[in-house]
Length: 279
View 1: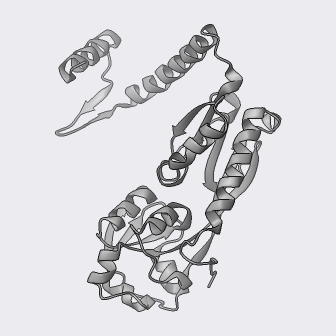
View 2: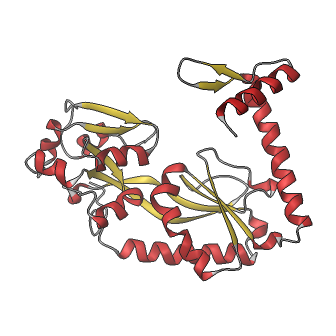
View 3: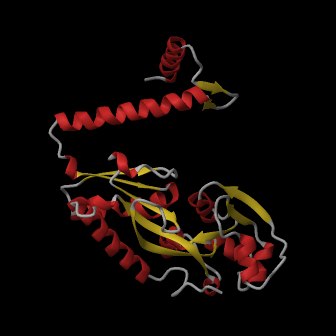
């Protein structure tokens, strides 16, 4: 459908409902409060319709494996590896649900979630699969432009890239490195860690990279960690979360076993440093 046709359908729907679903701004549109409420209802109805359609087509619900995880972890770690799970279990119909909102595991829409947190989620089973630490990362070109970054104080000359919701920030990293009250050259801030990492890859500055999100880029040479000995351990990590009564499901056992193998191979590789240093 063309953009014009979609706009006409939306206008017809708004006229039918008698409310505005979108707020039309100069260069973008956003949902109104009524539109956001309607989106939830429509999503639920379409999910029910999809599930019933699959049942009528005779698809085995036990073969459908729906995994929920965050935007950054999906793009930088999980999605590039999922083909190996499919190769190992061709009988599974794998769906990746990407959202930073914790999903409701009790409604049957999602089989398991991989969440970044403390490991305490309440009324569900949670297994820590991957610990995390942070360390400065930048592109090889940026490292050369800055004449090499061999000490923590060298980073005060750099443009620092920030992740808005990251609990461990640059101030804490400099304090831990022995440079308290360091004046930080403020750079761009991003809502997702993956966006800060991509900015670092483009040579726009130095990001405080999470080990789980930058390991592949370091191995591929897109990023370097100039100070691997100054890796800062964090309290949070990545957990496999699922309903306790579904632990014995074959598809969940398959996912859990595959994840543990993938993580074991991942942590053996050279990344930022041989070990995280809680300094």
